[in-house]
Amino acid sequence: MIRKNLNSLLIIAVLLLLNACQKKDDITTNVTVKGNVLNTCTGLGFANVQVQFLIKQGGVSTMLTTTDANGNFSFSGIDIHSSSKYSYALNIESHYYYDYDFNGIGPIEIDKSQITTFNQFGVSGNFKLCVVNLAAGTIITPPDTFTLKFQQPILHSYEPNRIWETTTFPRNYMPGSQYSPAWGNYPMGLWHITLDKTKGGVHSIVYDSIYLGMGATANYTVPW
Image 1: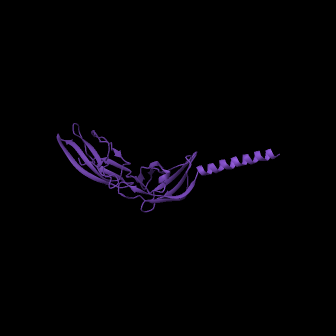
Image 2 (image 1 turned 45 degrees about the vertical axis):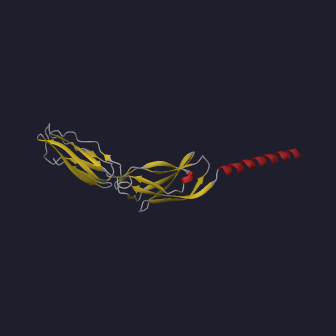
Image 3 (image 1 turned 60 degrees about the horizontal axis):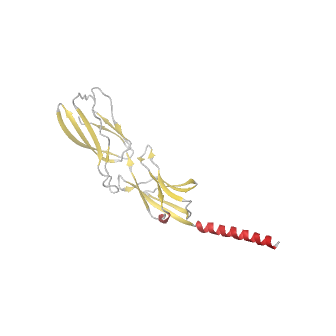
């Protein structure tokens, strides 16, 4: 009987020890995660952007918040586990809607030791569509031709050395063609245009520009 009791006590002691070790291996800290979303095309905070905080442990659970007028966001009261079974990330999904477009970013995993560090993200606000047209009645007869290049050389303060450029088009408008090339979902802003044309056997280069705002749909008429 005494041996039975001793065995029971020993089992209970082992279980308590294992439980204590498990608790020690997973320390929970309650924190606030803050950050800012920047519109790389303007260098200003991006308002009304939905930010996701992802908690990965087996599956993935998601917390949501929206940036304020200055692009700031905050997740408060988050329990961060020290156990390696848990990992954390921030994510911004791409948004294509009638009011504005932007390309998302992430998921970006956050180092637990840096979990309370202010997180800065940059996303590009995009225009929707730009349709390229010839003026009504214009007829281009080969070998006359032209190419167009649209380029945004600077994405303001956040990415000062980044250049965005479209595929060069159109190669050639044939007589009577109704083809109107269109391009879209590129970063908003002032786009520089280079028109390289041959008209009546005379070659020339014309420089132009167009401002395409976030979510904008626009038309550009080739100065033929």
